[in-house]
Image 1 (tube, helix red, strand yellow):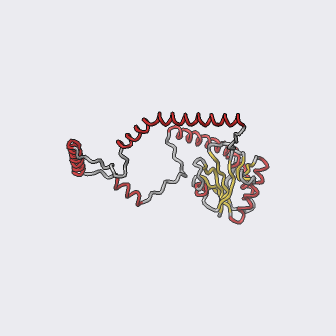
Image 2: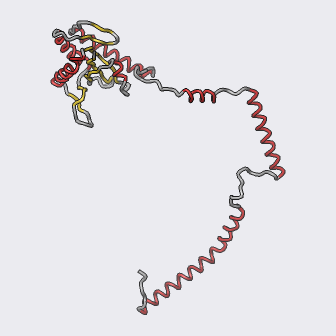
Image 3: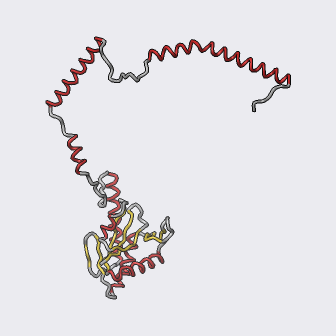
Length: 257
């Protein structure tokens, strides 16, 4: 057996999806990543007539409602600009007519199966009122922060990681904590004493590190020599300019470019 189902996005009241599946309808809906995507109604149909019924229903729906297209391919999708209650009424009427031709039909909704379904105007009003109540409850639960999607998958925990994390978070015994504190105090006392004696050696000192005092001496020497170097460069530049001007006057100047 297969199913013709009507699904919808609860945030878009004017759209509904009409499709078919050979899985259980709730399982088929739960495969989507959209938490607002829910099953509205489903009908159990014989496998032999399932595809034919879907094609016929799509044709009837397309005559009355606009049909959406896939953005990537441009082909028609199973989504229609149609309230799910209206889609439910149209599909039910169609299947009711088909049932007179020995089509096996069951109406499935909220784990309830009803044989020989009869659709009336009162049934449509009840469906619409139920839909409004569900929307109100959903919106209120979202505001309260109590909403839980029935299709949200719980994350799988890695048993090894969970065991490791649990072992790390175990509290230490008081005796271990006191011993660590005493050891830390001894290290601090020894460091302070070595600083007083002048025997303290930083763990970060190494023979490859540059001596700061030597670098300071070199930089000071370079600064003291800076004015002399600057004046000599200025004099050299002046001499070059004079030579260039003289060569221009003599007509012997040759451009390096």
